[in-house]
Amino acid sequence: MHAWIRRLIAILEIGGGFMGFVLMLLSRQWNINKPVYDWILFIFFIFVFLFGIVSGLPLLEKPQLGSALSAAYQALQIPVISSPLLTYELFSGLQLGFGWSKGRYVFLYGFGARSILVFWKRTAPWLIGVNTLALFFFIYLLIQFLPNIKSTSASGETINHANNVQPVENRRKKSARRGARLSGARRSTEARKQKPVHSLHDAFRQMPSGKVR
Image (tube, rainbow, N blue to C red):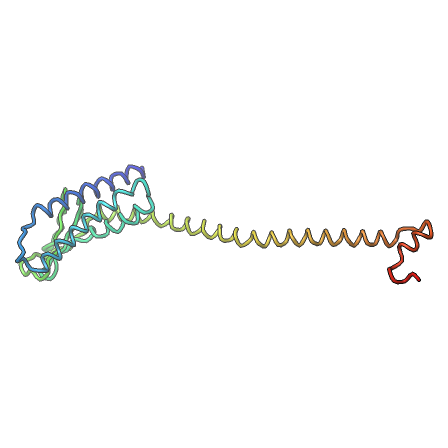
């Protein structure tokens, strides 16, 4: 189930991103005299669609990285806004959602790619909507991404704890071995002190040096 959802998201992101990139290039009127603002928007959406392709590629091979990038890309596609102040819409691959305009609900749909960002357009109608498909993908990817972060953090803490415990255990073992050697040395010394004297030669040998005259 999860593999199929990730594949669907990857197909929509890669295919939609490529289609959006091509449409941006084909629909562009290459006129140097165009306003700087128009060129900025063009470059912005070119990078957005390229980001969509980059987000979809690692989704199957590296799920953690792909989930993070794809969640950010899906978040850009959630809002649909139209007003005289701001008009914004972006989708890549597929759009399915609902909106509110002129006192009634409207169904939002689209296939392929679309990018709109306009400021201060008085004739723009009022509409507020949500791309529910992008919202679903965003929540799904977020759920997939957050547990991976927690598990990675937990494994890192376990490794650090093991690294901290190991030197302590090594010091304890060394102290135990050193104590065993000292105990053995004491017992050997005591055994030599308590050795019985069988001859005068042994008595002189056990006496400390410098005491014999």
